[in-house]
Image 1: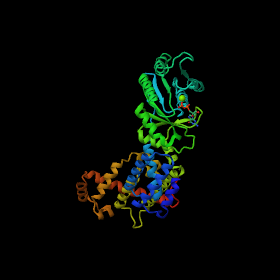
Image 2: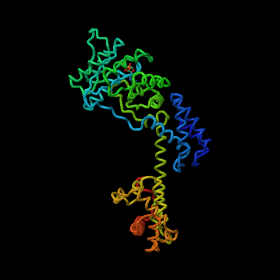
Image 3: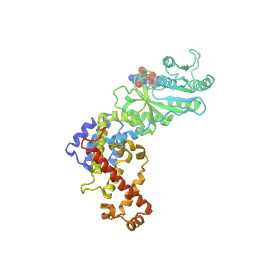
Image 4: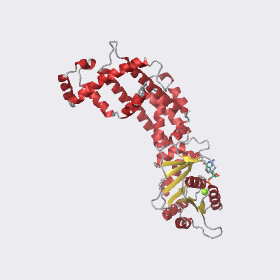
Length: 445
Ligand code: GDP
Ligand code: MG
């Protein structure tokens, strides 16, 4: 898998922070192979690697992760971004019925999806109606009727032998019927061909114009691999679509089609179909698909854990110093500032403070701390001389006035800061006495 490959590439680099150009080149090669193996289309692979390269160059040196982990993290983030970040929800019409039209090649899984979607919507309190606008294949109507029965929803279809062979008319009439029977959602199943052809596109476009869908979903078989790009592009040009549904994800496809379609069309993948049963259906999860494309799941968990562990270690070190006090090793304003900066770098102050023992009861106060205030405190301390930082007791009235002027704040703020500093130092000493050090590590870690 990619993670093994990257680990091998970086075997001699463990612990080294910054990624060199040579490292990035070697990495790019491995990612390229992995993506092509996952059946991602070549132009998409190229684009993808270019953006990963860029991010890797600009990446801040992580002390928590080794180079392989850093790259994997970047690759994963980039994949999730392209695959759509947060999942988009279906758009509903202001006035019912909401019309959802399905398009895609024959065998993509449209009819099956129609049933899955209908069942899912019905479970969520809707009254969907299925519409058989695929009159191409002899059994298409009957297939939808079976699916509808299994889903427990109404199917609108031309009477057998009625001679109605116009899918555009069926689709159009169905909307009227849905209104009359008070269905709030109409799902229009359409015909597909084995390959893209002009007649099929035209029919889909005509149906689209007849029913003005609120959502057109492009249904695509995940096993289609490299062809996904041309097929998706053809449907985008010929019919247009708002969202994508990936089917047959229960197969062994690595999901390269997902990346290709998302990247080339810019449309969100909304649902994932993963089996023949109507319940084999779920919202699409970009993060899961990213792991699948990379052929790794637990590596990402390990990365997360490494980062959390590092954060915990830093916090423990900081806390130790905080709690030391006394013994001629007094906690100074300079230490205070360093900690502010550290905290700022590590993310939310509140999150970190809450990891400190004994801070649980102070939760509300911690939540009210403003990160901007942190910056102001740092600015004020910057305006002090080293001697003042070392021994804050010498900061008298005239020094306060000077510092205030220098850092552009009121003298009152300096007073507040100094008072709070002494108060905090007193509390810390008390805590240090009570806790007797933190050698045992952090609670809950
Ligand atoms: P359509 O031509 O686009 O309407 O495709 P169908 O819905 O008729 O599906 C074609 C075949 O794929 C059928 O045999 C379905 O049972 C099967 N199928 C559809 N979706 C899935 C899926 O998610 N997983 C699997 N394993 N089979 C599927
Ligand atoms: Mg069908």
